[in-house]
Image (cartoon, rainbow, N blue to C red):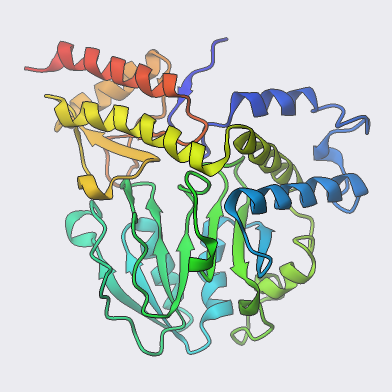
Length: 361
């Protein structure tokens, strides 16, 4: 069976090369006579897999030794609570709300202290990134929180906010490893891996070591303390071992592809093909301000819900799948992550052009 072009926002497309490698090792990982799925997370073999994955990620991102890399479970939703539990020392934090996930994180933080919404784009259905050059940062805020790339709405912080000296915490789930990043600009950055790195079921958190203390909010469960996981080298409990293995393979693939500079160039080329078509189309239009567009998630509409549905159906029949927009906004969305080949984006645009010719009045 021919593989489809999968535009899902997550779980999402993985490099075919990586999937083939994993398939070849499914029954016997490097002569062990077993799959990594069956392997003890305390074994020397898995220890090697874990350590190599961490080192490759450090190499790709240029992560300094002063930052810890944690492979955690629970998804981004658990981080919405874990972050205030560990970092909200003054019981105050500032949130820039640019989408559904930032809004959920903001609401979760309000359980543990004073969550201050210092900027938002909700007034225009999160279709832009607000000006964050001179924010009303709270004097007592422990950190400023952003969701850097908004998967549902297709917006991206192309310039990090001016936090006026406050710690920056960022959810990078849907732009993780899509371009180079200066890790030292963040106190903590984290992301669910199921969008741009690996299978669902894990979060990678990169956190400055001095922020990892035993000083958490009263009542913080043991499992929710960063220090517990850091001290145990991400092996406090049984980790998502197979996911770590798969992510490690993706890190190797990214290195082979030329690293994050090369991926940024590749992603810009893919995105420009799709955005250029949207800008000239008589039927389709993008829904995001040009200056705030994401390279990873591209939402678009025809202006007719019926025509949107017809397009999604016809596209799927043509092997272009998972183009339906998020249920909260409708329309269409093409997620064109690192592993989406250039040919996939070209095939999508060719199909859109044909659909436009058939349906434009």
